[in-house]
Length: 445
Image (cartoon, rainbow, N blue to C red; front, side, top):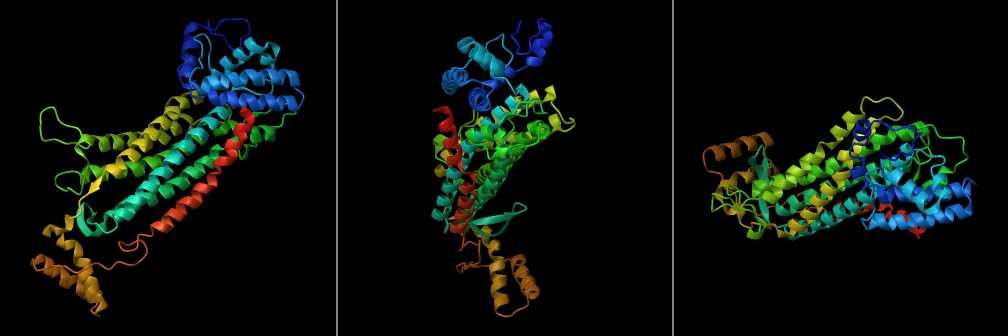
């Protein structure tokens, strides 16, 4: 039978135990490192307020550092007869330290323990994703500057519309990442608050210091109301998943562009052959599978907020076991998001734009607005210009071979990449990663 922190001298039915534990042992391995951090801060706080002796805390901190290293090295194991990571840590502390291990759960519950671990896990994974977004942003800006003078047709309704450039195309995705970073910042702020000490959702009569654990773990502040601490479970995850969904939509749209632009009907971009795949029957195929899978993975990420919302949407305040199910989809999503970002950073510099697209006469109509504008500047009313140029196109008489002169903010000739970069950097600085690194360094060393 499973060992349980809540054992009261009787065995729970084996099938009930199996059903209620579910995938917790597997999912909780994601949280081991972060649950240990929460234990470190909690034990320090208990010692400060007199609920642990200095000697007891010293013993616990020594063993917690051992467990922390095991978790970081991937050596932490949740035994088959143990319910979850929280139980495993307490049992190991008790085995190593004796009575001090039995005291560490004072003034907390597995409810606030798991919320804290998920917050710390999320924060670490979000930081890695944000750093990758920054790197990808820099690459987009570099490519935008490199290809700013290489023209391509722009489309509306998948019909040729107006002149664009590869610089504008790459730069658009850089600016999209800038707004995605704002969404990630909002999710970061919601996540980076401390629920530890709210216990089962109603606090306790112990004189604990929740500000101390918040500071030691590098949180911006506590989640103050103990009931709300529990209400944030699912809410914080949904906020983060929504930000990831927005980011994934940016990557999916770029991947869809690449699939279209690599087709023989477009031939706007190409990849070296070693980055394409073939067909088992058609010898000529060079498929953009990498972008198709990127689009698919990102589309899977984009539906996660809906799934999390449906698990939590009709729950009243207070804890419910339904919340355990959040972990199964939420915890692994960071690996998938990170994989997509890593691969995009890898493949992006391999894209080669074509530099002679607009030599094809079929693209002449994209210059109709240029001709129309020239006539407007000469004093002809806009609607008369519109009709005149339209008639030229219908009669097959339209032709344009003059240089473009787009100068306004965000146009072909004025991409404003410096301003987009400044916008991104100003947001990036607001995460203040160094504060968290300092806090965790002090706690663990």
